[in-house]
Length: 55
Image (tube, rainbow, N blue to C red; front, side, top):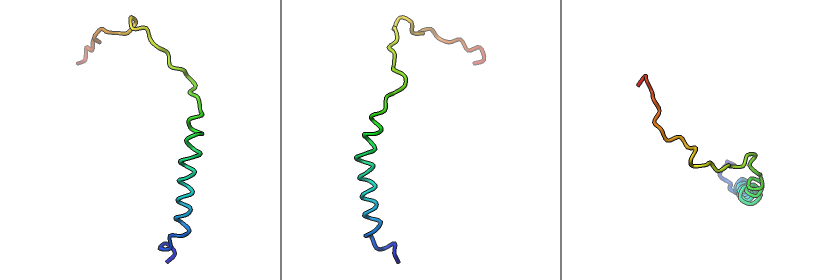
């Protein structure tokens, strides 16, 4: 039963996780967001209650 022999698949598992934990986070964090967040003026925020006639 080859599934019980941990030598081949355990090595592949360790190398795969090593790649996931070392290379991929650097690639993901190097991307820039396409839209920068804008701060809103607090005086323009909607503070009134909505009127819902069907409720």
